[in-house]
Amino acid sequence: MANPVVAIVGRPNVGKSTVFNRIAGERISIVEDTPGVTRDRIYAQGEWLGQPFNIIDTGGIDMGDEPFLAQITEQAQIAIDEADVIVFVTSVKEGVTDADEKVAKILYQTDKPVILAVNKVDNPELRSEIYDFYSLGFGDPMPLSGTHGIGTGDLLDKICQEFPKDGAKEEDESIKFSFIGRPNVGKSSLVNAILGENRVIVSDVEGTTRDAIDTKFVDPEGTEFTMIDTAGIRKKGKVYETTEKYSVLRAMRAIDRSDVVCMVLNAEEGIREQDKHVAGYAHEAGRGIIIVVNKWDTLKKDNHTMKEFEQTIRQEFQYLSYAPIVFVSAKTHQRLEQLPELIKRVNHNHERRISSAVLNDVVMDAIAHNPTPTDNGKRLRVYYATQVATKPPTFVIFVNDPELMHFSYERFLENQIRAAFDFEGTPIHIIERRRK
Image 1 (cartoon, helix red, strand yellow):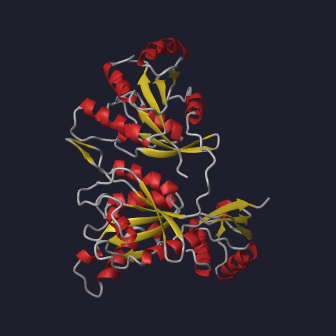
Image 2 (spheres, rainbow, N blue to C red; image 1 turned 135 degrees about the vertical axis):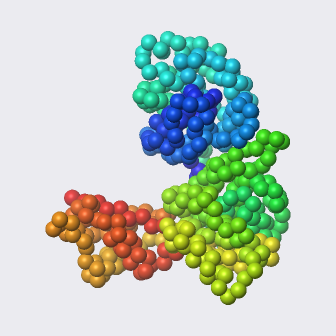
Image 3 (cartoon, rainbow, N blue to C red; image 1 turned 60 degrees about the horizontal axis):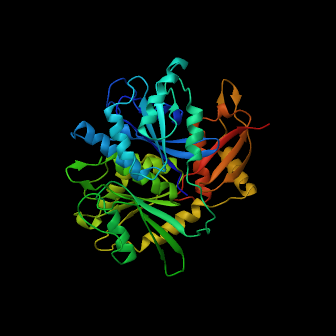
């Protein structure tokens, strides 16, 4: 199930990025006392009292050369479209401005909860000045200091109270997978080709698909799939929604809901930086991953083309060495019949569980062939290993001192585990713990 989404909106220079970083618990966006400086990451994962959620900093959504108010309008609209809860940030130092009222009028159009936060209340004397903000019409203003963290806990409590409550839902046993990638790599075409019918609009215009569309189907063996087509970017008149960052936002939500992610590359265009960005998020989220090279029919090929392309992928996506690669064409249906079977195999590996006895045999054999490292005369000792979770497979290794586990030796153990068991398509996590 996808995590709820919190959007931080407001006019420039009210401290949206500072609030964003405070909630995320780390400095993610660039923070500088200049309007419109945020050009960095615009999303993060946060957690409060055990409740995970995603955060969007709309200040990072750049609308290009559009006028100032048009940018505010588009950013607020993105928040309305994407978020479950909206945090409307204002500044006590400037009071209620015309731009604040402009944002408020846009937010009146949504039925989603809006929390009004008055930022830069850095000392108790300023609290008396927040009452002017009642005029914006969003109930009690919440005093906040993003810089010092004052009021952050109260704000997070309020945010979590407003998250949608999930009623009792029938358990969905289908394999959920999504196609992610840049606009115009052929995600919607792949959906249609697999389904054999045009349920999703397909166009050469980047970003025809507006919303993530779930489509269920059953393969000849009776396996039920839920296919999630991530949305691209649509042009709205003369105002362009952000081309790269906005599509990453859409991909994030689909990744959160997927068991297996199909990372789609365009064979004609090769690999771009945004491909790495999106794939990195899927990897960090611990999802099963398949690399799908689409439009393979458009290339002039010889006996070495596929091998060379695969080598380039392995070089550019070194952290995805476990992910299988399939070269397909949505237009000619080349190799498309391999995808459902590959998704089933990756999903099976993603939820694979290994018994502790067999796992420890593999780990101890690995140590016998390649003894543990030493540091300043102290040797790493491995006592026991056990699997503690699936999706992705997660292993805890009990040792005498976790600091002695060099990343290269951890990688060696991971490779030995992969050599012994089929974990193709899934990341595996290894956690070192001191034996008590």
